Image (cartoon, rainbow, N blue to C red; front, top):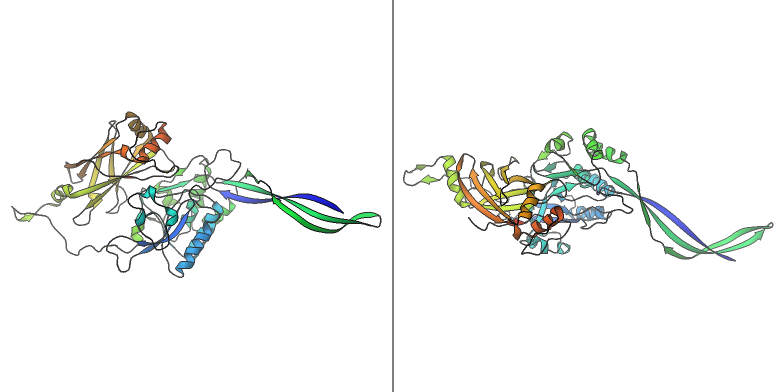
Amino acid sequence: MLVAGLVLTLAGPALAASPKGKRTEPPKLTRPMRVLIVADSRAGCEPNCAEWISAEGEIGPDTPALFSRAFKALGDKKLPLFISSSGGSVKAALAIGHEIRKRKLDVVVERTVFQRCEPTPSACDREALKDGDKGRPQSIGAYCVSACVFILAGGIQRVVPAYGFVGLHEIVAFRTYRRVRQMYRVVRGIENGRPVEVSRQLVSQQALPTTTVETDPDYAPIRAYLTEMGIDTATIIPLMLATPRTGVHRMTPEERLTSRLVTRVGSGTELLPRATQAAAVEVAAVDAAAAKPIAAPAQRAAALSGVLAELTLFYPPAGETVEIYIQLKSSGPEMRTDQFFADIQLGNGARAVARNIGGGAAEPLYATLTYDDFCALSRSGESSLKIALRATENPGRARMLAYDLAKSPSFAEFAAKRCGKRVSSALPQAPTGEASHPRVKPKAD
């Protein structure tokens, strides 16, 4: 009787689309994706408020099961998918994309701002969110990078705003060797003068540490999938191959349309029923003394005093710019932001102009700030940002707004990460590793 120990080594492929240097193991998810069915929280939608599927976070091996759960809960109901993700498992993303196409769903690069997470998103317990929670769509700060692009490709309509962030890079593949130590009780005998095995019984089994090595990725399944989804691989694959895994290529609006990855420039709200119905009566401002209507340019200039501006800074997951968004709101008739622009002056003397580039009347004013200007601002200690809001047809009159960026925790965190110097902040630091989009209220008018 002989007791023998055997070590069995099993190998399985794993694909990921995360930037890397020289890895010996796949990247770990820092913020796993949450997939939830959301009800519209915006006023005026009752009693039939819109719904959508929210998917935010990194794509892991278990993410397809989360989508399956949501699809099962919906039954035959079709809802648009609003997604914001830095990528993750390519294999999982392809499986999700196939299911989305099978169900003929639309996909939008869009975040969801949950009602229970306002006004302090950083303090929100995302694990406590559940199906049916109320929220509102928000295209600012949404992005779809790496493996997320394959989920986007699965949509019937694939919607991204003009300023949206869609990023690519080459994929990385890993092969994981899982070793198992198995102990057997082996009974041997003698037959015709030769030792033979009579029986074998497993006595114990112990998992040993795994070993993961990088392998050459196979783009054939990627090409086949994108072709099936109607994407032009002759455009998109070279962009992937030309971008190292340590970086991200932000697709231009032209590349997104030429590759057919994006079928429509817009926001998620365009796929939802209107939350509020605008009055069917056109309201005109009137000069009481002259008893006659005021010219449209003068109306817009006068309306500046009633306009509220909300500033959002977005620090993308890659690239060389910080993005500035100015959302305009008014208590009057529906605000047309394409009739306004904003001159932005930073405390260090740098300037920028924010305009509506999305085409929609309600799109935010948009501008970018280079890292050089951002870091110069953070190092100067002068974190003020002044905005002169002007009507396009009457730019001579402006409403002045001022903001203190140092009051945003994300300003200090991002400056420390990108500029090598921590900037003092009166607020707690935002979670590390997340693209942040703080809202800063004006301190003066």
